[in-house]
Length: 438
Ligand code: ZN
Image 1 (cartoon, rainbow, N blue to C red):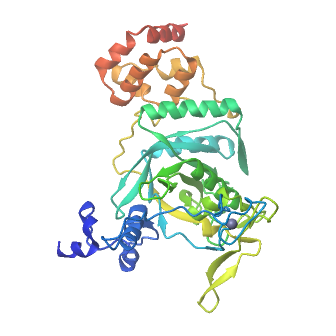
Image 2 (image 1 turned 135 degrees about the vertical axis):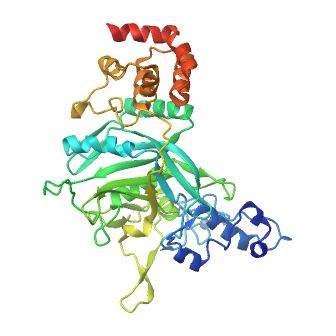
Image 3 (image 1 turned 30 degrees about the vertical axis):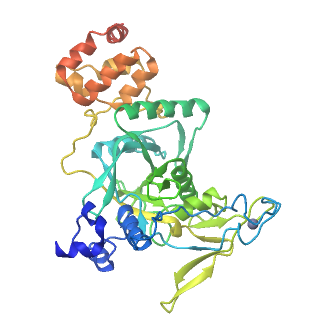
C-alpha cells in the first residue's frame, strides 16, 4: 500500500503494484504495447504534474493537414502556406500503446462457422465483428473487444482475395444490422477476413504467407484498417477534441508458421489514421510497403522519416523516400476464447443460414426458417430463436411489428419461457407460423 502514493493522487482509481509503463514490468509480463489507459495515465502524470497550474488535456490526435485559418493572415491553403500552418516533418515510430489489448471471441463456433464458407469454396471471406468492449484483467488497465456475432456483408470472394459490394442497398442492410445489434447492447467493433490457401498436403494444413520476412498486414489492408478506424472514432475525455483514435480491430485468419489456421489481431497507429486523413499514403504494389503520395497543388506532403536499427545496432533516422515498411503502422493485439463460453446468442454451434452466401449456394428463405425450428421442446425452440443471423433475416421479412420484434429479442437474450409464450400469442408470430406451415 505504501508504494501507491508515489504514483499521484489519482492512484485511488486504479490499484497496481507498480506503474504499468515500468519497462521492467512490461518485459516480465511480455507486454509489447501499453494499454491505452496506462498510456493516458503516464502522459497525464507528467503533463499535469504541477497541481497549481491549470489542467491540460494529456492527449491530442496527430494532425498532418495544413492548418486552416492561419494566424499569419495569408491566403488559405493552397493559395498560401507558412511555417505556422504547414505540418512539420513526420518521424514514424512504432506506437507503444494500443487502444485495445485483446480480442475475445465469445465462442469458438463463431470463427468456425465463418470459416465454413472458405472450407466449402476456397474463396476468401470477410465479416463484421459485433460485440462490446470490456475491461481486460490480464493487462494492467487493459481493454478487450468481446465478439458476439460475425455478420457477413455482401461480397464477391475469390481464391486470392475478395471485394465488398458497397452498393447503397448493401449499406442500408448493414445500417439495419447495426440497429438490431444496438438492441442487444452490441456495436460494430471490427472486421475479420480470411487469407487461406490449402497446403495441398491433404492434412488440413494451410500455407504460411504472413510472417516476419513478408508482412502481417498488406499496405492495402493497413490503409483499409486506418479508414475504418477513422470511421469509428473513440470518445475520450482526455483529448482536446473529445476523441482519440479508435477501438476498431482488424483480425486476419491465415496460416501460422506451423501451417495451422490461426487468427492474428491488429490495429493501426494514430499516425496511420492521421496520414490517411491527410491523404498522404496509398497502397504499394509491394505488399509490405506503404507508398507516400506525391505533393500536388492541393496536397502538402511533409518530409517523412522513420527510425530503424542499422547493422551496427544503432538506431538511425532514415528518410522514407517514397515509401516505408507497413510495420510502422501496426499495433498487435492478442486474441482468445473464454474458458467457459457464455455467448449472448445461444444457438451458435448449428447456426441459421448465414447471410449473403447465395453465391456459394446457401440462401436464407422461408423454408430454411421452418427447418431451423424443427425441434421438439420449448427450451430448444428458445435456443433456436437466440440466433443473430435468424433475427436479422426475420427483420428483413417485416412480418413482426416493432414491439413484437423487441419481445423476440428479449426472449432470444433472456430465454424466459413465460415471455416466449407471450411472443407466441402475438399476431405477428401467428402470421409467421401460418406462413411456415404453408
Ligand atoms: Zn500560415
